[in-house]
Length: 203
Ligand SMILES: [Fe+2]
Image (cartoon, rainbow, N blue to C red; front, side, top):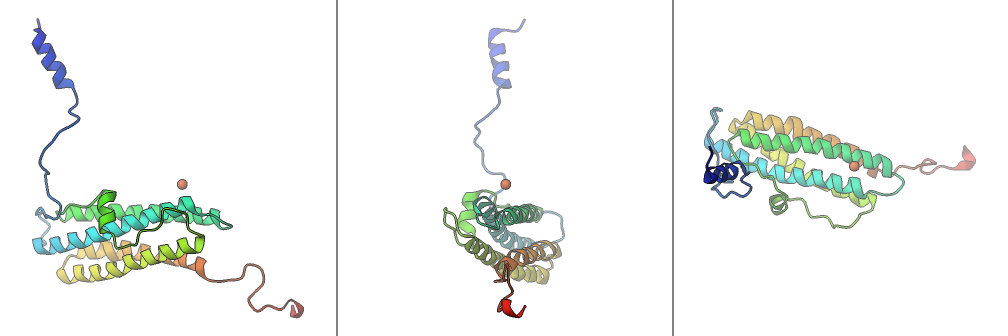
């Protein structure tokens, strides 16, 4: 027969350990060597660059969701959908960049507190912007990401980190350039009804 104190011990053992305290497995900023035939110094530089790119990509991703929610005006529907499409594409980039950091042996940032501290993209107001302001804010953020991406891609290629170069060029740069096109075309001042300089009498 099971004794009383044994039952208590068994019940205690079945209880989920909700609060635990232990040292981190790996500190942020360190590189755990993986057998990927790349120098530790090369991995460390790529990890540092990619974490900066990650912070800015997460900010741009969230900027799209903010504008998806807060957009208004006659173009509400198309921009509401476009902003969410770009949000989803930026989310995929976030995952790709973070997993590249981990596969280089680094530690990726993840939480908004760290993103807020690190990002180079200026903080937008909490309130709602008009559409032209939303669009130019997004274009500015894209340009920051593209500028750093090109420099990081070049640095990775020169160091022999082809995987990082490929991710940054094929995915980050190409996606951002395409999104700039889609957003930027909304800021071209084209007429809605009559062509510029049109003269009704002559038609
Ligand atoms: Fe939504």
